Length: 216
Image 1: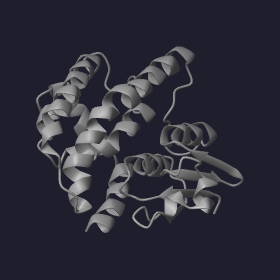
Image 2: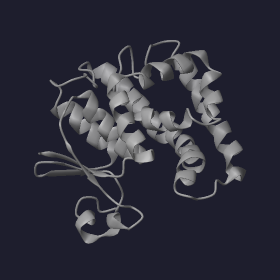
Image 3: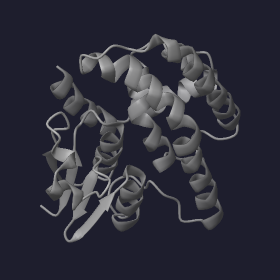
C-alpha cells in the first residue's frame, strides 16, 4: 500500500492526518510507533522524521512529516477524492491559509497544553499539573472569542464550507469535550454549533472508532 502513516493514534498530529485520509476516502497503512519504548528516537525513524516526532508519512517514495504539511499534500494530490478540503479560488485560499496559521499559532498552544494535562497525562499514568490550567484556559478563551466573531460571518472558520482549517481543530477539540474545558466552547453559541458540526462528521466517527479501540 502506497500510503503509510507512522505514529501513535493518541497523538493529535497523527489524528489530523488520519482524519484527512478518512475524509478523502483513501486506503492507508497505519504503522504504530511505540513512543514509550523510544521507537521514534531510533535511526530508522529519524530517516522518516529527523526530529524524531510523530507523525511521519509516506506516499510511495515521498516522505513527509509535520501533520499540516501532510494534510495539505493529501488535499492537493488527491483533490478528486472524497471531501474537497481546499478551495480553488486564490483569495478564498488566502483566507483559509490565514485561519490555518491561527489554528497552529494561537489555538494549539493553549488547547494542546490543556489536552495533555487533563486527558493524556492520566492515560499515561502521569499527574496533571493543576497550577497551569487556569492560565491556559484564559488563553484559550481569548482565542475562542475571536472564533465566535468569525463564525458570525461564515459557517466555518475558513469560509462557507468545511476545509482543512476545521479538520485541523478536531483532534484537540474532541479531547477537550470530555473535560471541564468544554464549558469554554459551550459558552459561545457560534463556536458551540461549529464544534457540534465538525465532530459529527462521518469521517471523524470512523477515527473515533480507532481511538475507542486504543483507549478502551
